[in-house]
Image (cartoon, rainbow, N blue to C red; front, side, top):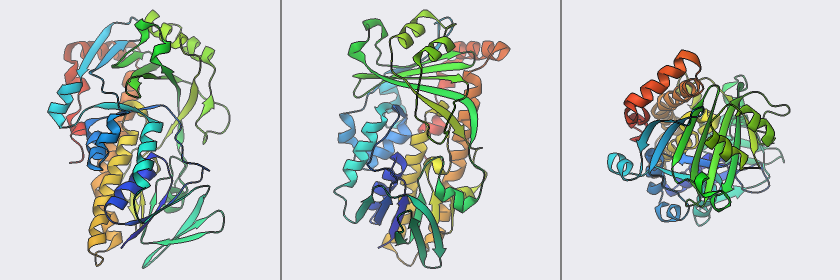
Length: 395
């Protein structure tokens, strides 16, 4: 039986652990935090991602915490006018075979952890920081900050944007700041005035800013993310900072009354400085030898296609498929399996990275570009907002 070592216990790491365990591999996972927890707010799950989660046997558990918006509406942040609509609900289910859903990050993380606990041959280590690794011909050795050593057939770096595994594997430069700030908030819908409650996805587009809102926790809570231009002081590797609500309100001072009312109704915000890397340039950035990268460690993405967590889970699914073949046929070569994983994933990940960067430019457009964007959305609407190449899943 193959043994897979995983660095990182976030959504990507737990997804990889669950998928590989279901494929018959032994799994040993190392998380540097003292407890399994997920910060942040909501996640949008396209049909491509819901299909993966259902394939892991999570359909029933997800049904209790997912929200299923019926439409995605794009509005002008300045005038409040509707610019375009994408039908979700039954339309997405019919078109792609899986629904479009939204979820709280902590709920998804908790579901993955709960699904892992009854799995045999899975060991989870908390308060254990991965400091390095060494590849040998027959395996890989992982080292931790407490002097621990673990041996495995493969190592998966799922340790996020500032990945130590990536740093050693690729020897590249750190991520760079985008100059975009994300203010995130979660609010119970029952605490909001009736006119501000919503069960759909709404995207407000304005000059050098945009705001996204959608329901989570079966619709009981509203997730709101406002992205503006600026920089934060302090440690950029710690993305979760306290936010001053007054700063956000000043940034949105020129927006329409409905949007300002929503923002003013929310007192507590967390601030995230967006840092990224360029889109992937080759399969070597996804795996080398017996070491594979997954999720943000391989391809950090701006949130403007709502696919960061989704691509991590697609990675995990593909990784489990290639390693599952090694489990049933030990004569297969692990490095060759990981090369296949990388070849299958890197171009799709790079396309999503590039698309998210491009969307950020379009969302925050000014001048003639903003006028052309709004006109195109009014004319073409759903044709622009739907993305069959993405929502159909891994080709």
